[in-house]
Image (cartoon, rainbow, N blue to C red; front, side):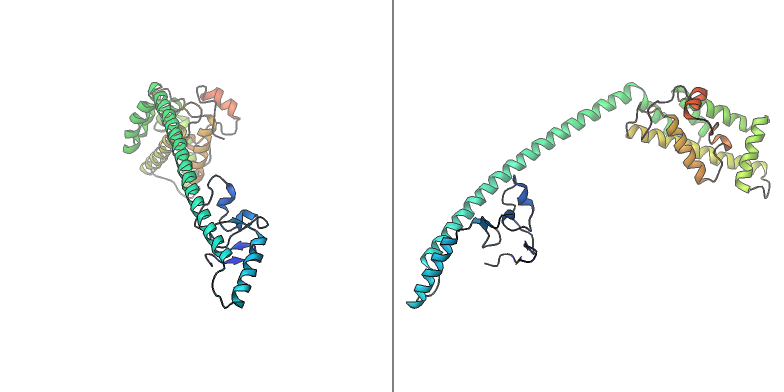
Length: 290
């Protein structure tokens, strides 16, 4: 009937079957295969439906056609007409069965999807309750205005109120940068050297602008790390681990071509995480991202 073209060399149809004859049978989804890869038992005269092959019926049709031609007859033999009628009835049967199985598969899929969506929504509500009860949502809402206004001192002061373990270190460091202490002079020298390569000196205003730029970047990266920690549900929501702090500092300072320990990029960066936890991050999240 030339419904679809079959290539005997690759034992496949050259176009996909538009029907999935049996949705619950995996071979039905191999839409280029011939009769579910069972050519010894089945045939597909239309290209769309498989039927059980009966070689005796073929012999009978050939015999009847030969006899009819001798008697001047043309067209289909009686057996061939019967086979076509039988095939049409079988097609109707398969069509009804296909629709029934498709309806069942569709109902099953919808049921599974509804249960999955319901479970996911329940998990989301539970997680949101955790974020509310632990004050994480309030903390992120209070920090956001400082990020938008680029006020990093306001950011760290607010973070300190929520117990951010890095905030006290950040506040102390930023405060010392603008004094006349020995630590301030060392930090300024490292920062200036990193940006100028020692080829020229920065004015006081240039150095202040540079420190402000770096401070804003550190704040932005810290806020982004907190956001990702909450979204990815890593350990305690809204609490960073030493590794998470390391990662965003190293990425930021690599991008800015600064040494890891410049401007507090990472104090004690040479030390193991366990030592840094003991020194300034005792309340950091012990669970970090993989």
